[in-house]
Structures are given as structure tokens and as C-alpha cells.
Image 1 (spheres, rainbow, N blue to C red):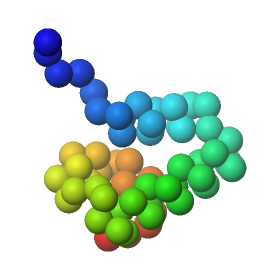
Image 2: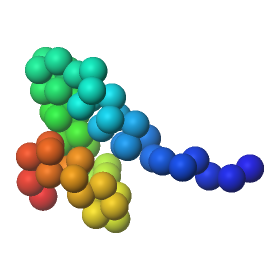
Image 3: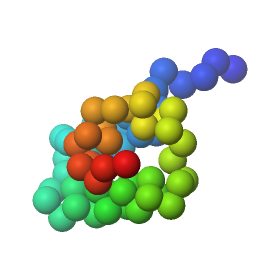
Image 4: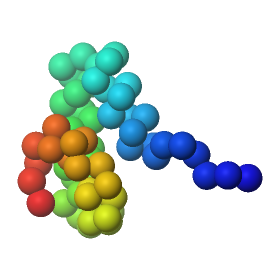
Length: 60
């Protein structure tokens, strides 16, 4: 079995950008900022998905 062509973060970012409401965007940003702040998202994932994490705006 081959790996997927994209990561779950790619899917979440594209869905949030296309179908998201302001409330959904806020909830998504809060979730990922929290996960990043407690160390649940490895630095290499942040680097690989830099545009998504810049969109979040939650800093390092």
C-alpha cells in the first residue's frame, strides 16, 4: 500500500478555506494553536505545512 498523496493537515486546511465559516475557522485555529503550544505537533510538520501554520497566526 502506498502512502497518501497528502496529509490530514492539507485536507483540514483546504476544507477550512473553502467551506469554513468564521466560527469554524476560529475553532480550527484554536485547536491547532493549542496542539502546537503543548507540543503535540512536531516541528517538521510545522515546517512542511508552513502556509497553514502562518494562516493560524498562533506563533511558535
